[in-house]
Picture 1 (tube, helix red, strand yellow):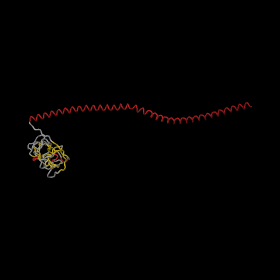
Picture 2 (cartoon, rainbow, N blue to C red; picture 1 turned 30 degrees about the vertical axis):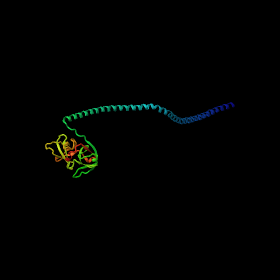
Picture 3 (cartoon, helix red, strand yellow; picture 1 turned 90 degrees about the vertical axis):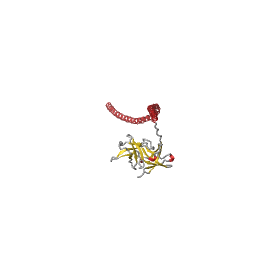
Amino acid sequence: MNNRRRRKFSVFDRILAVSLSQRVGERVLIGLYIGLALVLMVASSLSKNWVHVTQTQLSDITSPIFSTLILPVRAVIDRGYEVSGLQNLATENAELRLQNQELLQWKDRALALMNENKALQALTRLDPLPRANYMTARIISDTGGMYSKTLTLDKGKEDGVKQGFAVMVPEGLIGIIIETGDVSSRALLIQDVNARVPVVSEDTRHAVMLAGTNTDKLSLKYLDETAEIKMGERLVTSGRGGLLVPGIPVAHMVQSSKDELYAKPLAHYKRADYVQVVDFGRQSGIEEF
């Protein structure tokens, strides 16, 4: 009996021990799993901070090194820019030398033409035109009205202005100095009814006298009936009368709707604030202007 009971108890004890050991093992595994999970979480957070710290430290260490190493590279790049600039300068210098050579050739040509002109003048015994002296004058007032067309300028006797000096703008002649004060002068415009300008047609070389009408139309006096002047042809001073030198642009030919021929001034004084007062050295014909 006692032996049977011991056997029963021993079997029961063994079953109970196995059951207890299984439960303990499961609990231990669960604890290990939880602990491992905590360790992984902590390691993950620590690894992020470590990576960030490591990157920052590496940047602090490598930045001075890279800054030092980049200096030669920058020097090479800058040197390349300098070489490129020198090449451009060399190209520009070559172009300037070529242009200089061309200018020298033109200078030689101009000198040759001047010498040829002097030789022709000597052969024909022509007196060269006097050199003109220019001065700039400001238009003070436009005193032109229905019965007169004049300008008042801010240059007078003290500036060397004399009667008979031409008054011009870039487009051509606009008038003649007729009165001079100490510090001002008065110019008679070619549109004035009292103005007369001897001219020739630039291409066909027909002589004609331009007469002012107090308008922008200049009448043609003493024009040969057989003369054929082209419309739009320029009229330039002929030099007759001794006041103006030849070749100064004055007007151009216009034909009205009624087949009336007249000339229109090339220069417009109303658009100018300044004029050129020109001394051609010819004041003998002022009475005829």
